[in-house]
Amino acid sequence: MSNPAESRLYLGLGPLEYQIMDAVWTRGGWVTVGEVLDDLNGHGGRPHAYSTVKTIFAKLLRKGLLRRRVVGKAHEFAAAHGRQASERQGIHRLVQPLLNPANPLFAHLVDEIVSDDRTLAHFEMLLAQRRTAHRS
Image (cartoon, rainbow, N blue to C red; front, side, top):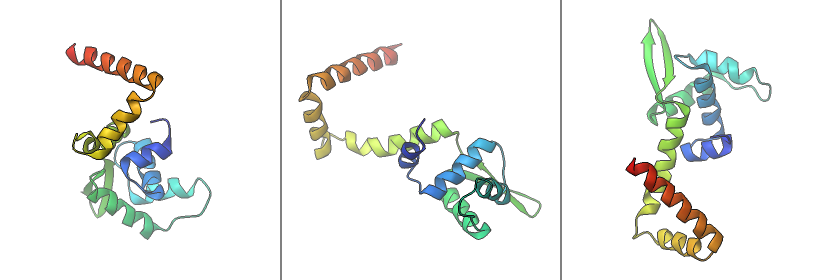
């Protein structure tokens, strides 16, 4: 995703949750809360408390976006998936319920697509491309 606001939406994350995940993805590999805190506080703006960032790490762990390992007495964290894979999973979670034909939004989307010739032509082009790609 080129747009962090869209990516954050797809992932269902708050602003600080996304900033932390962005720092984890940017660093790559295993990181500590302190390392990410240094990254966050090094960019200016309002400084974050260690306890706040540690709490967000726990939330991201519960959401399945992070994994944890213990090294001595320290806890290290890594992204469970890369940025693009996480975004794809987030988009899938958002879109899947909408694709149920019993969902009224599904019918509304179809009505919107067919009511505009340009949108319909673009949709048909995308559909043809995807069908060709899936057959290959």
